[in-house]
Image (tube, rainbow, N blue to C red; front, top):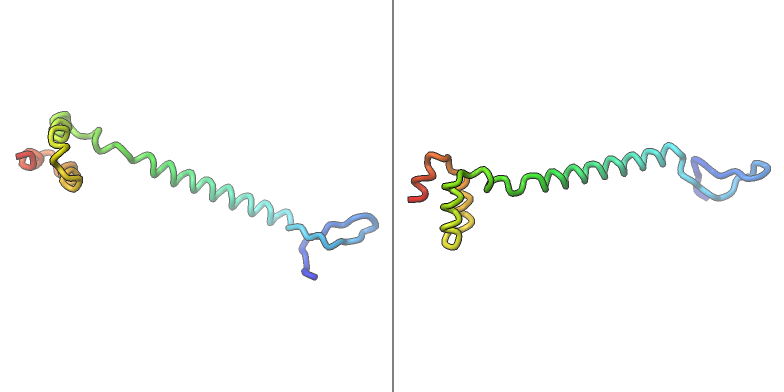
Length: 94
């Protein structure tokens, strides 16, 4: 018979084979679940918040250039264009 930290007692002080986790263990598990849930929520929100900002930070002339060449430029070239400093983008366009 396995030993329990906490057993249910019924009438006349008799203990039965019902094993229940101790109340502090339950609270600890609830706390761990809550912390895990909050961490998942933070990771999800952090992942969603960074999308779509790069296009909005481009000047209108650069947005127009990208819209004109969208069918002939590769994704790698777009990434390079967005990461180039503003002064050097004119050279890239030529």
